[in-house]
Amino acid sequence: MYAATVAGTHYVFPDLRDLLAKASPLRSGDALAGIAAHDATERVAAQIALADVPLSAFLAEAVVPYESDEVTRLILDTHDPAAFALVAHLTVGGFRDWLLSDTTTAGTLARLAPGLTPEMAAAIAKICRIQDLVAIAAKCRVTTRFRNTLGLSGRLSARLQPNHPTDDPKGILAAIIDGLLLGAGDAVIGINPATDSPDRCAMLLRLIDDLRLRLDIPTQSCVLTHVTTTLGLIESGAPVDLVFQSIAGTEDANRHFGINLAMLREARTAALALKRGTVGDNVMYFETGQGSALSANAHHGCDQQTLEARAYGVARAFAPLLVNSVVGFIGPEYLFDGKQIIRAGLEDHFCGKLLGLPMGCDICYTNHAEADQDDMDVLLTLLTTAGVTFVMGVPGADDIMLNYQSTSFHDVLAVRELLGRRPAPEFEAWLRTMGLMTDRGLVRPDRIPDHFKPLLAAPDP
Image 1 (cartoon, rainbow, N blue to C red):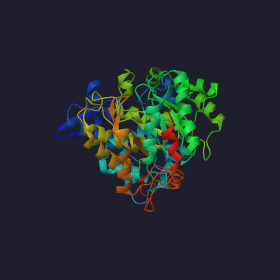
Image 2 (image 1 turned 90 degrees about the vertical axis):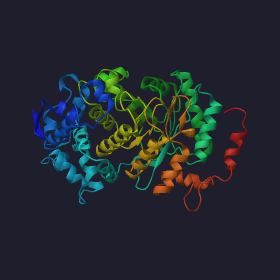
Image 3 (image 1 turned 30 degrees about the vertical axis):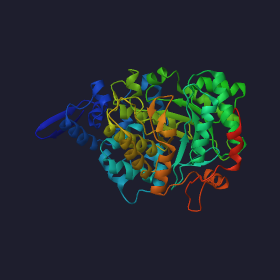
Image 4 (image 1 turned 180 degrees about the vertical axis):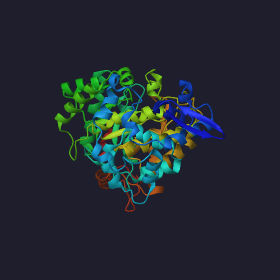
């Protein structure tokens, strides 16, 4: 039991699950679930009580029962006590102060990451201001590799997302070329297929791979289909670089995605056996989003931010190349407006980086949310300052297949220039070779490179 007194009222929270939910900054999903604080005063009381909780309490009290949830078992069974020893004596509030101190460096945080549980990271986020979330995440450095190196200091990568409502190869190829000319695609060239047809997915994989080989692009490809479809594609000999899957923070929610941990292990083993990486072997790409467990009625009374952090506990077990919080995609039922989306995006990035993950963010909103592109500009600028690994590059920031708003190729160029960020080093060298980058490091395609001209003249991809 946890308690705090605020303004003469004594508040009692029966367990960590309730305390974490009540301490969470206001968002529509928790209110929908009936677990949010009743008012701002109760929320402050919960945050005060949470700050006094020892970090060790999260090892003794599970928010989702150990016996019935394989995600909880994964989190606790893989916890590293030796790494945790560095902060084991601290409370949640004391840990926040320690994270903000000058003596806590990127190297220290990297060594600590295996000793932190997702619930610890979620708890810290709940008592942090936005400034804290940015400052602490900016200290974290997580580097991954496949055909290029992602996450290095001073770098910002972009997923090139050329989705098309009918998977038309010519439309997709046009979008890919547009993105490459504007410096996007170093994180991954990733297509959300309009259907989960194995034949269609194989066609899209061959389309990207043929273009990659033709232009000698140091990047990786992915068709974001279900993991079981990807396993079939691997067996059939399709050119699979990365295995994609949406994941969540409870076993029940993952079951709604049609997956379990054993399935993810099988897929990673199959992808590693292909040995398609040239500079590394991080072969997994995960996407997450606050509210996914609640939308499946698989949240076990937990708040959506804590469950989002638990999804990162799943991701961490598979050494992914990329993890992407699709922060505003699920809709206003879970993140109502721009303010909630901005806060959630920074929380997600903070928790993922603290747990040792290569965090990216699809800075986005649906058209029925109380948000607009100004909100996305704010979040993009804050996340870049916080050291986000990658963001989305979508033609015109408008995904015409998924029907939502994200960030454009030009948005990526703008924050790279504004905040002094560059693409992945191998991709940057390719841009220079193609004549797409100036001596000042700016992507300025003043002409179509000769290597691209046959593509533009071709009648069909």
